[in-house]
Image 1 (cartoon, rainbow, N blue to C red):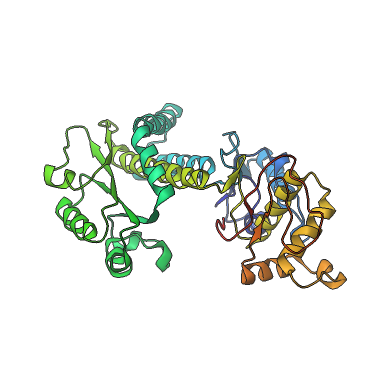
Image 2 (cartoon, rainbow, N blue to C red):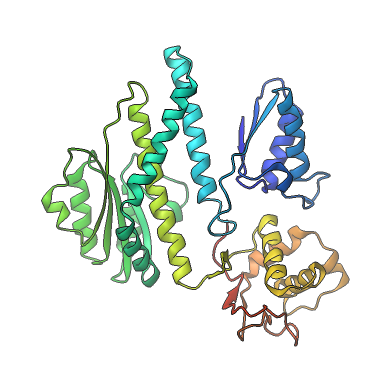
Length: 390
């Protein structure tokens, strides 16, 4: 049973790992992450007597007996600190798809995957990177557009079973027609994601309907060598990120790998657009995203670490400041200070408290105290407003 915590932080992952290690008879435990175990989060976890690091260290000992496995290749720090959906998410996808496809082939064909076979599959993802980023100028243009207009979402063709859950994560054609199309305005941007193997007549029909609402449309189209986008559809888009894939000659793995490449390429494009737009909108200080909800313990500790980093103040002072911001205008009592972190997180979530900086070079939280915390020369437009909740 694999568990994924890209940078060895998530408490819920640690809890599941602990349970599985206590019940090894039917489970093979695998931890996938991209930090050394000694860098795993060691903060206390509420109502528990352990930490993520201690659990990961237990797994390391089990790995010596091949009773568990820790897969933590070094991919380096994220370009945007804490945004593990980027390099961490991509590396997780590559590892999983390579290992599971090899296992699938072994079971289905009775052929054990060789080291060379695994290496060749991994190299297809390297080629995917080269093909994707050959479109960098057009990806950059889309990113700039996303930073100046409201991007209502991107949408791809697929069966209903492939859609994510919840109205804010609906990407199927049916969801788009019923929930999004009617509310589009001229300031919205719609990104269409499709392959040339999809029903292009349906794509064209929907593009025409969207253009009645907004002229801001873009396309991310995947094709294979030899395929051509029909001219009537091509003319509807002012710009198309057209990614053409070479033919694959894997007898068994080919169709699977091509789908994996399409998905990973799409992920990279959307990650670049959304993250780059955050930078252009001024939501990043150095490489830290300041626009976040304090919705769980991981984000509470991240908020605290950011206060320490940019103010240079002791941890105790920063905890006091963070609690003041969450509980403002109520004064901090000893009972509030002693409350569990979950209490503060719940209140922060309910209030969705914005903390703004009134002057450059100061982290003066409005109305909380007079002197503020200096930012060592950095201008910080906002800290912890409602936004990213990862």
